[in-house]
Image (cartoon, rainbow, N blue to C red):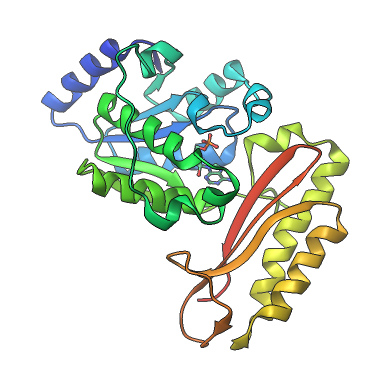
Amino acid sequence: MMILKKTSDLSAYIDNQREKGRKIGFVPTMGALHQGHISLINLSKNENDDTICSIFVNPTQFNNPEDFEKYPITIDHDIELLEAAGCDVLFLPSLEEIYPANFNNKRYELGKLDTILEGKHRPGHFQGVCMVVDRLLAIVSCDILYLGQKDYQQCLVLKKMIELEKLGVTITIAATVREKNGLAMSSRNSRLSDQEKKQALCIYQSLESLKKNIQPGDLTELKEKAINIISDAGFVIDYLDITDINLNPIHNWDGQINLIGLVAASTNQVRLIDNMMITS
Ligand code: AMP
């Protein structure tokens, strides 16, 4: 695997591959890689000639400075995992490579996506996500961008950003990879103690309870029971919502449309998110 740190080196590599007519898949990450990330690499390898992964802990998407400072960094292990998965190129840029002094900061018109759920609880977060992915896509001209359903709202946000900016990139969304017990894999899980990891299962269990007990009609009681599963385990909930696939809240289900349950909850300053299709 080639490790490139300079934008100019990566652009030269990509131009060369493009001249040869090679198809390029791109997996942007913030590192502290796990099998969830690797599933995206595997998907890309199956569908492209070259797979590029980036690792960049993007400061502009952290609304909480402490979360940024404590974000896990495991670069040697990340490189081992990427090598083993057969990733072709790791892009490992510095802050200056991504945000040079002349960087032009713009605002993305994301509409309600910016103000609901993650947008509401992490002001500015999605603007930062769009800023970095827009910049990365300018450097990594790819055919397919690989994203995880684990960050469902982020997938919708980036789809919108790609449309707004007319970037012409296809998105493939990969299913959430979970631990055997159901806990969604996340870089932030490494900040949990063994005991907290067990408690964190409540998030998966709450989503499973939505899926198991969903019935047409009023969803208030179903939602309350799911919320209780999380608070009984000692996690503090930011939100637990039931929405349609476009993230419009649904309070009364017609038994027809597809629903998704979404949760954000934290313990001891570690904030986790998860979601699940609860119908279909
Ligand atoms: P991150 O490093 O957290 O920014 O994530 C990089 C990419 O990996 C994003 O598209 C995430 O949605 C995706 N991802 C993170 N966790 C998982 C998981 N458990 N399963 C599948 N994809 C994931």
